[in-house]
Image (cartoon, rainbow, N blue to C red):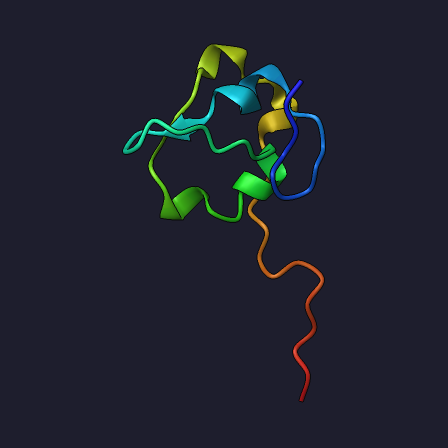
Length: 68
């Protein structure tokens, strides 16, 4: 059993296969937490293990308020 490094939820099989295509190190991030860095990293993953619940919409400063 592996947990997300950021939020500590249990990772599913697909999330546990996601790793850096540069260093080969596993990210150990759930799909929600990975969505924040998705466009900043190069990754490899086992698409055959992907489930519909792994499709997370990108978070755009979710919950933040623009204070004036």
